[in-house]
Length: 174
Image 1 (cartoon, rainbow, N blue to C red):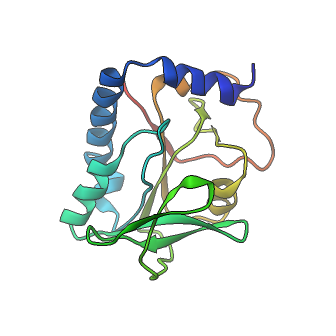
Image 2: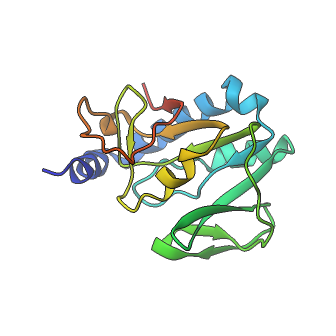
């Protein structure tokens, strides 16, 4: 079975209440991390059904007056637009939620990006949904990056390709 399908099946097998508990645990780990606390900019995402709900992290970042930005897939690349609590969300390409704000945010070394993915390994490798948007973004990114996943998405052999980009750290439930 394809690793992406296997990971998705593993997620679907998790009880909804267990997933909510894991989501809270993962958010706490992010919020308590040195990287989160030192960052001035947070590149985040609004979770799809199979992803970890990191909205509490977004709320905490906004409370701390960090710049928060959400992704948009444009011309084969991912770009990030400013997000505030008052901004409306819109459905973008691949049904991802995007900020309606038109202010593009450029990353710098004080940026922490939270990266969803389908499968990870303990060497910080990541496989996404297969379109390569985050891989292209991470290639030249010089900030901090966290891969966000459930432990059931961690595998020992991902069959990594040359274009697949690592994250700096993986955050998952215990």
